[in-house]
Amino acid sequence: MSIYEFEKAVKCKSAIEDAGGVTKVRSPRASVIVPTYHDWDRLKLCVNALKNQTFPQDDFEVIIVNNAPEDTPPVDFSLPHNFCIIKERKPGSYAARNAALKLAKGEIIAFTDSDCIPDPYWLEAAVNHFDKGVERIAGKIELFFKSDKLTLVEIYEKAFAFDQEKYAQTGGAATANMITLAKHFETVGLFNDALMSGGDNEWGWRAKDKGISIEYAPDVIVNHPARADMKAMLKKRKRVIGGEVCNKNNASKNTFLLILLKGYFPPRRQLNIFGRKGLSFSRKFLAYLLCYYFKIYSTTYKLALLIGIAKPERS
Image (tube, rainbow, N blue to C red; front, side, top):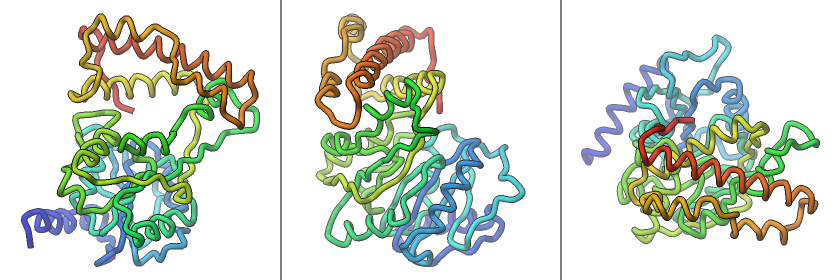
């Protein structure tokens, strides 16, 4: 047994005790990791979706990581035999995921978030890909909305959010639906837990540098709620930009003047929205205008971070 495997075994024993004696499966094919932060109501929906997977329950484990240890689960919160909850005090979803990775027993590691609802065939479809020799998967993230009448922010989300196929082309993937082999974390290392955002793509780029390929899998589906209001979107932008600035390998280290010059011009790449299907021209135009506003907001916040008058925020 390697030191890495010994550490896993010891910490897993502690996790079982911390979870109240929950019996974990001995040799699951897959480990599902779900960080959560003050989100019990939505986590219940995620747990129900994982309970209803077509993939056999005894063939996978679910490790939920409570990143707000002082916030205890509700009295009516219960878990199946192959689920457990652990605690991670270090702030940030990547610190939470790292804590679970040190305990995970599965050959395959599947990530999703507490606000997500995996499709019933999610794990089964993913395992089928790995049986064919895939190394990493960026699964499809399907947005769902509060009603058919979309808000301005929901129109923006529908136009631009979670383009996993695009992320995969650069080597990255959002951890709302990223699945890989456990052995790759020994090769690449864990997530950068100093980041509050962007750590998923940052890990993916490191994996790409190690020659670990990634495949976009449209049949491996997780449903994700679209943000519906401006406050939620601006909070997300702060988190994302904070992650970019903290990532030493990111282009945010460009000179202050270059960021200033580039940051306030209308976005060019996003003009391709006008060639897409599924949205009316008026909605495309509104989405593009909001995209430009977010670019201005993000640039201003990035500059504030660089000169030290603002600090990165967590989700």
